[in-house]
Amino acid sequence: MSDWPAEVHATLREERVQLVGYVPDAGHQRLIDLARADPAMRAVVLSTEEEGVGLAAGAWLGGARCALLMQSSGVGNCINALGMVRECRFPLLMLVTMRGEVGEFNPWQVPMGQATPAVLAAMGVAVQHAASEDEVVPAVSAAARLAFGSYAAVAVLVSQRVIGIKSFQEQAAQ
Amino acid sequence: MSAPLRRREVVASLLAGRGDMLVVAGLGSTAWDCTAAGDAPLTFPMWGAMGSAATMGLGLALAQPARRVLVVTGDGEMLMGLGALATIGVQRPANLAIAVIDNERYGETGMQETHTASGVDLAAVALACGFAAAQVVRDATGLEAARAALRAGAGPVLAQVKVAPERLPLVLPPREGALLKARFRRALLGPQSEAD
Image (cartoon, rainbow over all chains, first blue to last red; front, side, top):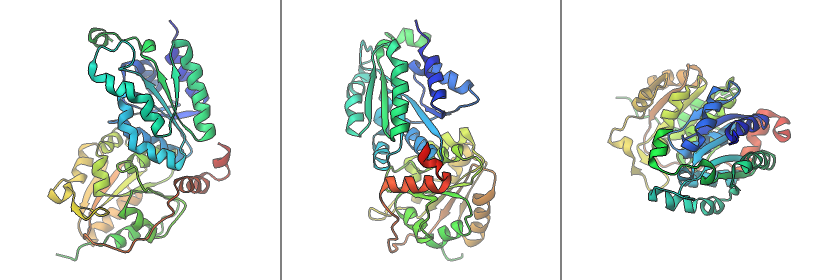
């Protein structure tokens, strides 16, 4: 099994990401720990994902690059704020771990998980998929260049196949 | 009891002699107040994304720790993003200040009462979230003290400034978002803003 979170962390460093805003997700656990332990990064825990959109926009105004980590359920919390990103052409890099997508055990995750790509696309966010572990790092690297190089909003959707949580029991044991 | 504070005078006072301070103006009346005090490249007036002014200020303050960052926003806008006070309380940026211009009304939509009209105390919420200082301001004497704290006190600082509910002439900033972003970055970062 590859250590994709460590490689993603290294990629964010290479792309000069200084701020990482997050609402915890089991799939982002290791990447969050790496960001929190990195003195070159400031990890900002958010009370709702929408705050991350403001955080990233403010950081860019100040000359700093920010990445946002969230679960697919959190995408829905960002929608209106994403209108500002589009109108202002703020760069935005979102790394979204998917739920309600493949092999979901919680039916309440399914509606937002299934709607996530369409919701992002409707708000002008470029959607890029990482369907397997091997695809995550190249997708994040390309998304970072697209976001910060072209002032684009980009979301990398990390498939539930990569995250691999299959039951409440497994999630509780993490 | 002294006469109620008036929002345009309050905001003009907070911004007077602003030096190199960076300003985020929340949507609606506070954006018009900041513009009435003088449109400036280092003021980012918001026309939407209600509830995001404080987190914009947080991102800016973390990116520019050597610069003072002042968020000027309304009570309705702050209420929509109340969780941001908790998030700021965790990060505790010493250079971030928030002035809530509190007329206890949603001013752009018909002057309906907000939660603060029923006594919700935003300064108390900020203190409970870990802000270094927060106060409710009701008169000119209080405003002087709050102004000093907002401009130079150890942050994060919040002042909830009670003002008269009044309808004032619109003084509108540019509304194209990409322009507002680019002019802010150019004024702050210089030619580097285009290179990065």
